[in-house]
Length: 423
Image (cartoon, rainbow, N blue to C red; front, side):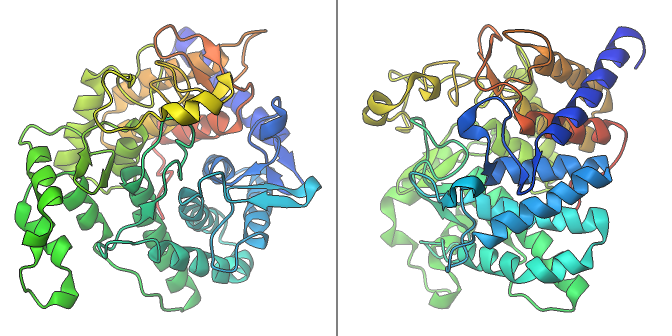
């Protein structure tokens, strides 16, 4: 890359690292410098920031990563759940309005990545019990015996008035990555953990409907000794058959009783590629679909290829009653907030997924457009806005959103040919 594009890419990397450094507090990374409600340790934001900090290799950012993980571990529930957010100055933490499943996944993934980046076995020994308990809590969120995690409505990063529940793709991709990280850390400590090796195959069976026999095997479970009880699940089997299309180009968003939500969650699909849940053939189909659906237009990348409207909400994701009580900044109107807006932090993961899949030229082009997105502002350049309007690209949401900077650093390092998510 040469000329103006190279300069923009390099400048965004410089600005991103600067924002990461300014986001450091004694308790770890905050989510945003400019919005009071985000100036605390939000677990998913902070753990994603740890991934970018680890990709940077900078000692100051690595030390802040350690403190972030220690803060979250200190406030873990007695059952093992990692909190949704911690407000150290207030002495307060909670698990979100509806609950939070993805934070526990992100904690294990981020700790695994931190240890890989630093070789800090002292911190690993200190936080190992917390990682093991967080994963144990996740295992107990399996309400159907599928070996996958169930989430409450609004229990993941899409936690506002557009939401999903049941078996959620995004959460289960993270669960698979957490299992991999936990096994690696256990091996480093000479510990043993009870972790299923077939979480990725279960994800592929459930969220990419194809072979009915594989799905009925999930329904029956090993405890039934092969007896065919699948006929008891009429609605779910019928929904599975309807979703099993030969031309499928993306994973389903979520699965509940009689409902295989055929919606493309861009982040969930991108992480399925990045964390190698999708094999090479499926990864190619996902990335082809996302390109064809223009998820990087106007900038990388939208949360959904198309916004969900009341008239076209077959899967019941829009919650009108909750929307009535929601402040305007978090409402799910079309092309705003979670509903089809551009989230640059997703764009960073998308660039890394492209690079990993061997699409280097596309990754480099998308990285430049991601730099342009981070440069946009309402009061000046380089505001790293939380999200942009999905139709016009207008910069909206909180300014100086730290996970934008973190995933840009992740993407920049990926384009340099570094493996930024190996666990």
